[in-house]
Amino acid sequence: MAAGKQEKSYFDVLGICCPSEVPLVEKLLEPLAGVHKVTVVVPSRTVIVVHDAATISQSQIGKGINASLSSWFTSLWLFVRFFLNRMQMCLS
Image 1: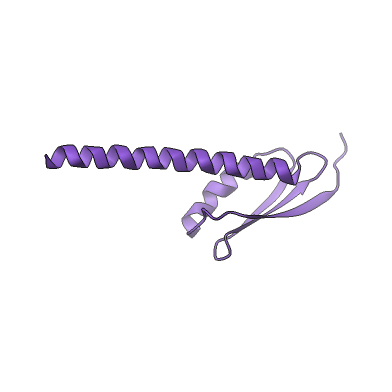
Image 2: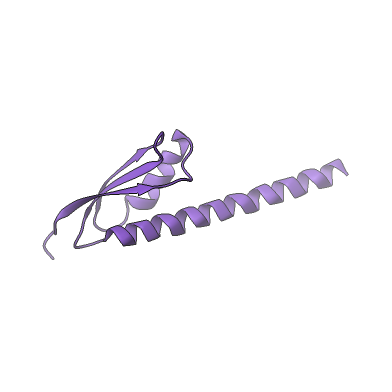
């Protein structure tokens, strides 16, 4: 299939708060077919994705971001709950 038109899409990702999260976002998006470049702007909490519009749409990328980050935050929350429960058991 011939490469389609390259498009630049902007996403507000409110969950981004520090530079240490940049590799996570890049790791989630760069492997997607049709994604050519991922730029994360931490201060504005913006993710800029250059992609082949014929291969992957802005909507598909957005759904991927939401699903991946939701899963990541759920895993983090479960870890924190486990850790707090263990701490409570140790203090008892």
